[in-house]
Length: 83
Image (cartoon, rainbow, N blue to C red; front, side, top):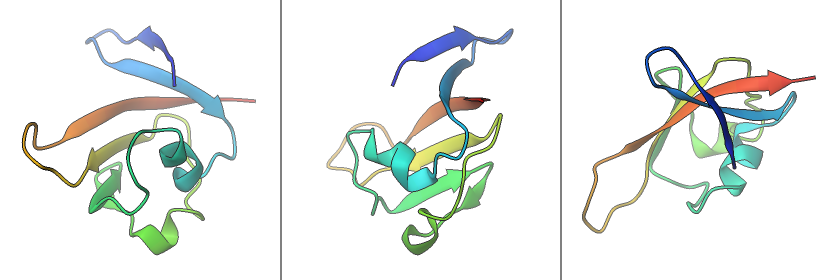
């Protein structure tokens, strides 16, 4: 996944095709889809609903992966959809 730009306050953006599900997006990352907590715009999306949750322009995804130490969480950039 490539970051395509930075916003005015330093946030980064990722471009994905319109219609990409949260599960499809997560499959591109080095984490399991069963991560304990994945939020879209601050709302938790349970594993059984991630395939049907389509990502929209400017969605903000936060992932709390299973940890063995280190950072408590990492935040992904806002999504910029393309046609």
